[in-house]
Each structure stands twice: as structure tokens, then as C-alpha cells.
Length: 235
Ligand code: ATP
Image (cartoon, helix red, strand yellow):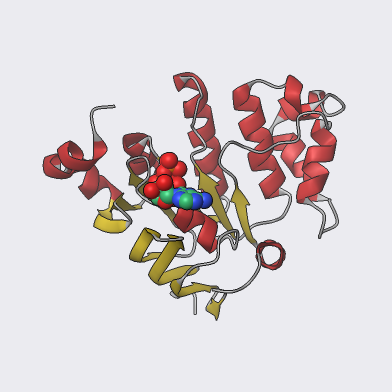
């Protein structure tokens, strides 16, 4: 059973009215793996990750998490089972304290893991009583990741965690993601920063107009000049 993927997505369809944003997308995340979905703005990346986390209802296809069909399972149930999303734009509550933001991630558990998050991110511990809005963009991203960690994920989904951050801070965020993966949590990462994401990932899927245009081991995608020129741009 350990060979079974933690996440299997088969023929996923997501539509908004007449817009078919995701068209028959299939992929897997192996247990302990770090998989990235890359592609241009509007390629359907957020729609896929939101369907997996239960935020958006698919119009077709199947999603299996831990071997169980969760296609119609609501987000709050998935969080309890260990499938936790770090949303695009971080979505921290700026006027609440850092501590309160972390406690939100622990609503269904004991909250014991907030201490582990503080150990991992000392800056959050030092400022735990301050409003989250007082943190820098990079620190807010760490808080968003910390809030997901206290929910004890087996699979963490991240939507554009590097968005709007300075290059050095992007490095910090990717280091944290790789540490989380090393700790045994599987990761599904959506990124417009395709090269950076593929360098961190073991497997990649390149999306174009709602479909998987290319997929394979991340290092092979990066080494393919045709793919880089066609889909990954110059960044
Ligand atoms: P981005 O980086 O901009 O988030 P993306 O690759 O994540 O891009 P999606 O956000 O999934 O792509 O969008 C895919 C398509 O679906 C786009 O054409 C987008 O305009 C459309 N779309 C996304 N959300 C909605 C919505 N709530 N209502 C209508 N159309 C939507």
C-alpha cells in the first residue's frame, strides 16, 4: 500500500459557466513526493488545486486521496483528513494576532503543533502577540504555511507561494517547502515561477489552456529546451 499515490487525479474538469478552465487533467502525487503544476496565467493551475482541496466543485473526473474518492468531499472534511491548502495570496487575517492566525489552522486538533511551528519560524514566535498585518510579505507567507502545518497535513497544497516576494525571500520559502517535504509531508505546488518550482520538485506537469501539455521528471522538463522555450518563458 505504500506504493499507492497519496493523490490521484483522473480526467478532472472544472468549468465556470461556459468557460472550461480545466479539461481532462490527470496526474498523481506519490507519497512523500513534491509535484509541481506550472504554466502561464490562466492555464488552470488554481482551478485544479482548488478542486483538489474541495474549494471548487469539479464538473467531471475523479480525485482520490489516500485511496479514497474525495471528489465531492468538502474542504473542512479534507483538512481533518490531512489534505491542507495554503491559499493563493496567503489569506492571513491581518488584524488578528499571529497566534490567533495559527490557532485557526488548529481548529480541529489539539493545537500542540503551534509550538513546532514557532520552533521552525522563530520570527513568528517573537511576534506572536502582534497583528499578522505587521509582518513582511515573506513572513506572512511563513505564517500561511505555519497555519497549514498546525493542521498536520499528509498532503500540503500551495498556490503560488512565491508570488510578490523578493528573490531572497523566494529562496527562503522554497527552502521551507523542501524541509516540509523532507519531513514526510507530500507536496503539490502550483507556481508561475516554473524554473524555481521544477528545481524543487521531483515531478512536473506543464499546463496550457486547461490541459496537461507536458509532464515528466522535473529535471527532464528543465533540460528540454523545446519545453523551456514553449512553456516556461525566460524568467
Ligand atoms: P492564475 O495564475 O492567474 O491563477 P491559473 O493557471 O491558476 O492562473 P485559473 O485561475 O485556474 O488559472 O484560471 C483558469 C481559467 O478559468 C481562466 O481563463 C480564468 O479566467 C477562468 N476562471 C478562473 N476562476 C474563475 C471564476 N471564478 N469565474 C470565471 N472564470 C474563472
